[in-house]
Length: 287
Image 1 (cartoon, rainbow, N blue to C red):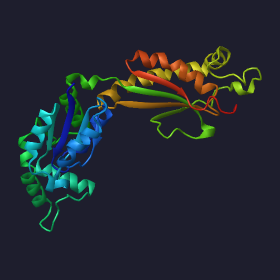
Image 2: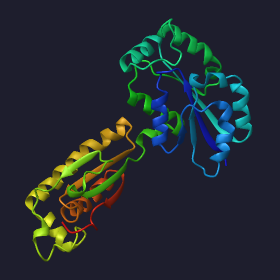
Image 3: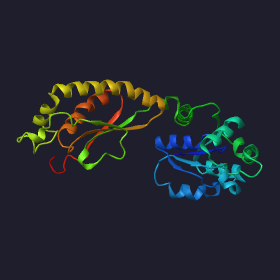
């Protein structure tokens, strides 16, 4: 089976990091600043699976750039499908980006940033000549560049890839989930904890679920959340977001948040997303 290898290269400040993150989110194993001379050994070490690989190669390892063409030809003969993505931008855009981020160009000397950019263009000329695609990011937003990278590597339908949603219930008592993108606090709803027969149960039990979901405030909340997700999810996909962590919290994460997370799952699945529901604190001490 042919294994896919993407080489991300080009000028400093032209969007290589954006391309690397896009491919990493798409399931590639990505390594930054790997000298080409080390690539064959690296590929042998990672050859046990079929995960596609992307490596960032640039002027930071300039002394290893000589002989790039021969090294890439050897990889192709070894059975790798090699795509070389060369990122560049206008001098004006590169100067502006380094000014805005206050980063130092890796070749910066007393002559200034313009001289460093010219020198880098010369040093990267051989790899540019080997490029499968040249991506000029001048005037582009991060999201536009990301979509172009995914469309080239994965095909034109890459922008419509499923959004992976992690829908998680939790208890505020145990702290906010560190990975949360969206957090909704449902502690204003009546708490089954204070109903003796419901206290030992969880939001997965029908009696608790009905107690929570039949509250008028809960019905209105769920309806508004579904409307919000209907609005947000297509826009997150359009932005290029590949995963989203939605967290529903109550006091202990056992009753209200669990019932509401379970109630929301079907509508999220209906939006064309892949949804996984987890209940972080449901099995902890009753709250």
